[in-house]
Length: 162
Image (cartoon, rainbow, N blue to C red):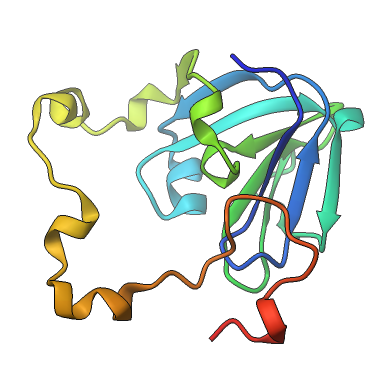
């Protein structure tokens, strides 16, 4: 696992963060709350001390998912960003929101009661690259409007994301 700093943010760039400390306990969670909060079948998070974490642009909206926990997300694009037990001095960050998620490695699994029975077969399946499914004439339509995977002084460029 690479050491800090780590940076990341939401898809539209309205919310950005920096971690100047460890990112530990990187886990895949299959629980129903993680499924609902991400709109996916897993949540993948890494924890860091609150003292090592800073919002560098904007701030997330927060939804209190239980008496014990809250989740942060971008109020503009909806990107799921954080999970936090409200009585703990740490925050967990969605690994997909990191600028370089390849820097971390999953160390454990939680909520395995929610794991889909077919997950164990995924690695054996064949697949294709995203661009392999897009006809060359349509490539310009698929140009990404999301924030790049690095900090920027201003976003969107020239004040317009369209």
